[in-house]
Amino acid sequence: MNKKKWLWMPLLSINALPLIAISCNQSKNINETRNIELTSIINTKNQEDLNWKNFLKNKHIQVLLDLAYDSNQEKQDYINSQKQLGNKYIQDLKKWLYFGNPIVSIFKDDGDYDTKPYVMKKGQEEVLQTLLEQNWLTFLYHLKDFVFIFAPVFDQFMSNVNNTILDAHEKNLKLGAFYLPETNNIIDFTIQKYADDEDELQYEVYLLTEQGFILNITIRRNKKILKELISDFNYHLEDLKYYQENVFNEFPELSAKSKASINEAETKKALYMNDFDQMYTLFKWINNEINDLKYEYNKMKYPEETTNKPEISITEYKKVEISTLPYIWTFDKLYKAENKLNFFDIKQFVETSKSFKNKPNNRSDEVLFKEKYGGDLLKYGLIHLK
Image (cartoon, rainbow, N blue to C red; front, side, top):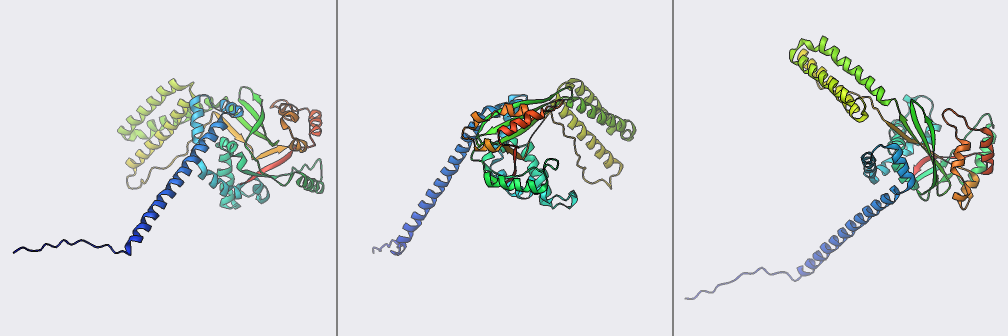
């Protein structure tokens, strides 16, 4: 007898069909949104890369990098470190500048460092100082993102407080209390060799912005830095020799190890006497070597008392120190001039207004120059980010 075979098939509810359609549409919409977001991120990054590329082509940037670094590799390493800071650094900077900008420092500083709130200490010491000294290139790149406030200079020998307040109020009405740069473009610059002697080589670089403000960057090379570094290295080497002869000799294995370190230090010192980078690497090595040997000694001598190896602070040596100021300057007539490049000679400004290390500026020339451009320099201080 033939048996009927039944084939069971799951039936889809008619009501479920619209849900499937909706689900597919939602997935499609999500994917499209993700693609749009990804495209936006890629476009933003490409635009940022292009902005940096154009910024680095500027003559004043190339000159600053040439003055600051000895090799193309050093320049490229620094540039890469600045580009990698990214938007997160700017957002963190915005937060800390609220508490640590130079204007807040002036009005909230009671002279007692220990009484300052943590946010002010961090803002002033770590964030602001790092921006102006280590990340000066980022400062110039993001110049258009900063906000500056008028910061009148009070000279008690030239004017009283009331006159200074009235003068500041008048200038506020003319130029505005705040200055928000529209661009980071620099239209002119000049370099002053401030000092060049046996101790140091110092350049003062003055930049004129498209809107007529003047920035100042200092580049200082310590010519005695290698000599100072070798002297400090010798001190640590003698310290290691003392421990090897008078302390580590209690344990033959440790004594032999420290003797080998001394030999290595003396051999490499002879090779690196004229190479700052290699000598500085050797200096950091001997600091760590002494710390390691002392730690091993303590473990052998006092096994029950020894805990973690202590951290050490190694003196930082820099061939070049670079810094910019949290202030910018302009003249009344310079700020209002339509063609600022033809109107103002920044080289003449430096020659008449800025002294050299061993040569003060001519006061009469300075007064005449200031009168030509509307009186004293107007000073604006960094206060915030847009």
